[in-house]
Image 1: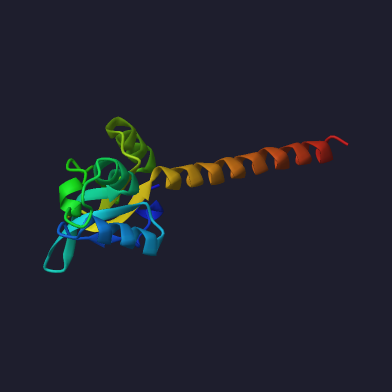
Image 2: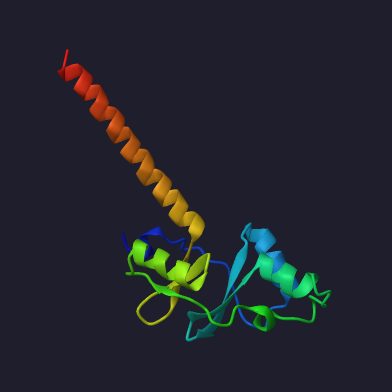
Amino acid sequence: MPVGELCIRQVVVTPRKTSVVEAAKLMRQHHVGDIVVTDETNGRRTPVGIVTDRDIVLEVLAQELDATSLTVGDIMTGDLVTVRENEGAFQTIQLMRAKGARRVPVVDGQGVLVGIVSVDDFVELLAEELSQLAKLVAREQKLEVELRR
């Protein structure tokens, strides 16, 4: 399955200059734990970083820094891992594991943001797949009983 079919398409984004406080407010407003930092050119958003609620706690609050004077560009993850929307789910999981990334922005062929995928999305997919397999096993057992009477 291409990761573009699995990813969340409604991504909360913000430019680098957004204050950390404003980013936290966006996270609260949209009930998300991360914001993708983007540069915009001709209406096309390219992901350049990501800021998580954990980044805000560890990089700003725990160090008692002024969250109003810092921007997301100051604390964002610099070496951003992205994946193309036509990449397979298994390959994406392998990449995330290798890079230690719990979530990655999904981009099109030109590097424009189209979505985001997280470990949670893969857990949900795998849970659904396992549930379908369990139903298959139960159905086979039921058919076996009916055929062998």
